[in-house]
Image: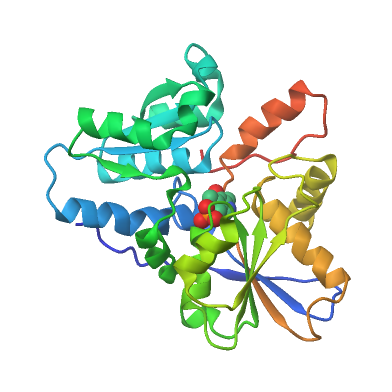
Length: 307
Ligand SMILES: *Cc1c(COP(=O)(O)O)cnc(C)c1O
């Protein structure tokens, strides 16, 4: 059994000239190595699994080479003393994964890897079957970590300190986080999910998990999903200088950029109180900079102090 940590997560105001109030809840600070929402999504899944007293507990999950989820599972395993295996997309990484910051950190956390071709990676059911046969007592966590139990865990991102806000905003990947926020929000609150990935089934999946109609999904930036533009980088560099809060280029940076954009267009009624969840993802900055450098692009001027 794992103890539910008693963290007091700070909510800080972002002063702007808009006629609304914007705040950030720093879920990224929940644990030095496990970023934000990923902690709560894993917590109850792993807890329930451990309650069944598995012999030789083992966590297995899937992800790409820069995955925040893979990083979080590896750190979670290390923190709670459970071995981890990552099934990683792209067998070209087999011999040079050490150069990838996410994977080399995950390995330091004790994670073992299985690299699979992009083609084989598509067939998760087959892969899952294979790993269950090999490790029948393991817990297989879906890519991105979202499932019913993960959505339950997101309840802990909300509390007395989040009740006053009119809007709750989060970045969306696999949708578990926004679904949980939607499920547990107050009657008067509106939930905005800012999509960082393209997935046409997302709305339906979130609806099934949330069972409410208080949420709206929006595109981060005109369907340039998963891509990092110079504009994104300039925004997070500017934001860091002004507010001293690091954002990641894929999720939280795009979310804040979108919130500013909406505020600019007077989307929010005057005097609304907006709360944005900082869901972490800062471990990805090193890898992003490596990539940006290779393309001669604008670089992120700060690095995560987390890893
Ligand atoms: C995973 C992740 C998200 C998205 O969470 P989902 O529950 O998959 O939608 C948002 N922000 C960051 C930084 C993440 O790592």
